[in-house]
Length: 368
Image (cartoon, rainbow, N blue to C red; front, top):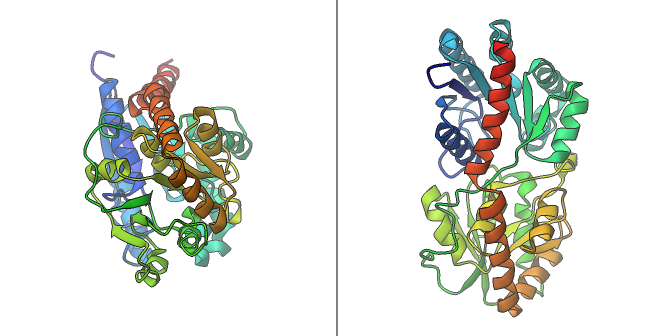
C-alpha cells in the first residue's frame, strides 16, 4: 500500500473532557498516528453515563454517527470500535464490505445494568447484540487477561488479544508542579459511577483510622455525584468536579496516595480491571491504594507500587491511608517503583505499537 493506512474509530460512548473514555480514545488515536495510521474519529454527542437527554435522543445519535461512517466506508481500510451494543449495524455493514473490524472490550454486557439499573430487564438483548458483533469481528482487544478469557468463551473464537490501558508519560511524570492544595490529601480521579466505590471512600472518612489532617480530594463527575454532594459539609472532603486533562498530573503529584478502590458490583469486575487512574497515578510517582481485584492488584504487587486492600471496605481504605501517612519514606519508594514500571511497560506509545501490530495483521489477512 503506497499511501498510509486509514482507520475509522467508532465510539458510541460519547467522549467528554475529563472522562477516561476521552483520554483513552485520544491517546490511542495519537499513538496510532505515530505508527503511521491516518485516523478519523466518529463519535456520538449524547451517549455515556453522564449524558443528558432521553434514550430516544441517544438512539437517534447512535444512528446518525453510524450512517455518517457507513456513507464513507470505502475511504477506510479498517474499523476500530470502542465496544458498544448499538454498533451492530455498522459492524455488519463493514463485514459485508469485507473491511476488518476490531473491537476494543473494556467490560462485559452486564455493566449496562450496573450503570443503568432500569435497563437490567434488557440484559439478554444487550448480550445478544454484543455476542453477534464479537463473533463476526476480525479481532477483539481486551484490556485485561480475564476479559480476554471471557471474550474467547463469549464469542466462541480465539481472535482475541490483550492490550491494557496506559499513561501519557510525557504529561504524567514525577517531575513538575504540584497543585495548590493546602495540607495532606489522598486523591480519587475518575467518573462518579457505582463501581468506583464512591460511597465506600466517603465512608472511609468517618473511620477512626483516617488521619485527622488528611483530606480526600475527588476529581470527576457522574451519576453518583449525589453522594458527594450529600457529604460536602465534611471538612475532610474536597470535591473539585471535572478538571482539564492537563491539570490532573499536578493534582496527583501533590497527593499522599491515589485511590483505585473499584468494586465488583454484580460481578462486573471479576474478570479484572485496568483503570487509567492506576497507570496515571503510578506514572506521577505516588503510591496507589488499590482494591484486590484481578489485574490491577497484580500490577500493584508486581511493581511494588502501593497497597492492595479488600474491596468495598471503608476501614481498609482508612487504614491504608494511615499506613502511608505514617511512613513517608516507604510511600516515596512505592511511588518511585510505580513511575519506573509505567515508563518501562505501560506508556501509550507502547500500547499504540501493540494495537498497530494487531491492525496490520488484520489488514494483511484481509488483503490476502
